[in-house]
Image 1 (cartoon, rainbow, N blue to C red):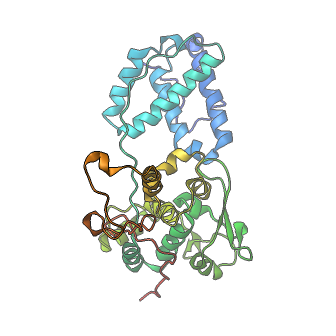
Image 2 (image 1 turned 180 degrees about the horizontal axis):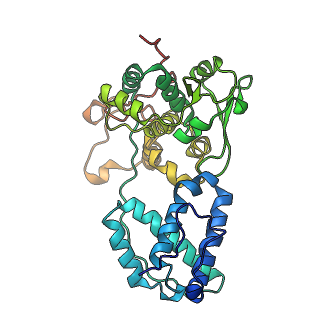
Image 3 (image 1 turned 30 degrees about the vertical axis):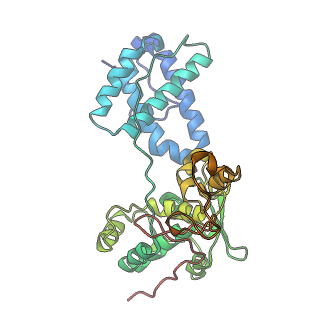
Length: 344
């Protein structure tokens, strides 16, 4: 069992207390954890406090009494089995990723010959729920004014909840229609152009935090948001889905995924690939390319259709003009957004 001397969640990883009796078995692991922690704190202070600090604590609690070479496939598998009883696969995947990163660091620095085999984790399909225009209006109507403004701003900027809460007037540039989100999840600041609606939301602000309630910065809207989404009949729509809606609308309007990646603040295209099927030209360019080969239907014993005849009465000249319906989660292409209604 791991020793009780491991750090607490509040400990600084630059000052990890070590029991002298166990120092020979702990030095390597503690050193690797410390180096990893310091690197993550530099990259993203908020991200470190939000997850990495807890994950490192958990890893030390589990493996702190072992030498690096003793952390084998069986011990990693046993750790994963215990975590599965408490957390979902996505969380387990992140926990194992941190452990693997620490061991990789040790290997690269010559403290470990090879990594143990890690168990496979089957991740659920990424969630891409977004709001239709009608759903957006229902949510706005159900929300109190302070929350309504926050929701609309999130929809128009793609800001994460933490980014919106930290938005200060110092980072608002009204003349140029921009805001800058600082200390974002990926550790980099992100500048975003404002829509007309977002600009109108900010016009009444002048100093200090942008989003407040009774003169104090907003820190939590979970209760108010949950109440609003239930009232609107949208219980499956999380606050983070407002960000998905922002990205979905950009893709539906034909914005390249590379541009969407920069506007949402992702570091790679992987996270925005989930929206690729929403592009107006999705599959259409591929079909046009295949049709360009001019297949001879005669070899199949079929007659080529006349110019005004196509299967199912479809118009062959309509190729890139994709018609979109409005089921749950998919909105019709549009270049305008609804304006905020005045509170009742």
